Image 1 (cartoon, rainbow, N blue to C red):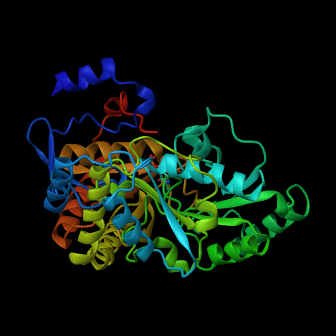
Image 2 (image 1 turned 30 degrees about the vertical axis):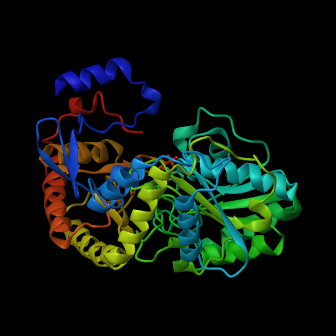
Length: 439
Ligand SMILES: Cc1ncc(COP(=O)(O)O)c(C=O)c1O
């Protein structure tokens, strides 16, 4: 094991790492990751949500193995490809709407959001965007330019981007009338520094994931959508992390009855293979040929994995499972919070959950970054993979495979119970974190 970790340190760039503990998986099965010592670890992180069906799912294996037999139409750019056409038709079916829409395929949430930024600007002729503090829409220039996450502080931002606070009920940015006050801020911005007719689009995460798994107050997103639509501002919903059944509905935006102009998918869409998609109005998606091209986009292997993912979500009732097992986890964490003062808040929908770790939950709610990192580390030692997110790195994030069972949820809760207890009792040394700073 040491060998792989040491070699990784020597040859793999830190700029593509967010490491929490020393692990080099050599396999995976269902909701378990198998490490280099053949230890099976239950996975509550699901590879940041990419492993929506878990690992080595037979439906994905079969689909990609079949697709690899014929790599015709490996590039969608200059040929029509049946798998891509079928998958586009299927994706259009899962996004409500009766206007004419089309689909674009890419490799990653980052390139999809990047394309949307360029497209929205080109189509509307407007240069400005609205986004939220804490938003994460990707790691390439365009998608970074509409993100507001602390991990991207080294990257210069795009001119004219307006950042709004993402309403956080646990740490309200206003003492009262949280949603109304943020909407008022927007109105004021529109009437002073940023005329709405200069804004191309607003980027919305239905749950702000990397910013701390923040669930906005009910109705906030709908109000902001209505404000923006009034001025012809395109409403873009980023379903990359919380979409595709994870929240207990196929699309997370349906909880709030949003009617986005443009929707973006990634992560779980490819079941672990690179795949992203945009669904948007035909007149925008047809803006100009070759506007957003990548040679291997829509390749049959990734597309077939995507088709298997969607089919399995339906056939195996995984949307219902997300809701059911999410409830078990929520109740389990509520019980743990009676015991552990480090647990400040439990939130989320279905299998998109966050558990905020704080040092003094009754008074200051101070973000407990070190304790959070230690809980993740200790959980790993005890057999559970869990990552953390948040602008202050103190929110345990749960995005497990949607196939997680109730028993597995309970197994993970037991491990976390012990991990939190060990951290609270000072049984985890600071030194374990030396190489594992997370993000
Ligand atoms: C909401 C959201 N959008 C976009 C992205 C970018 O996706 P990727 O890193 O797969 O390109 C992420 C990644 O964490 C995300 O959480």
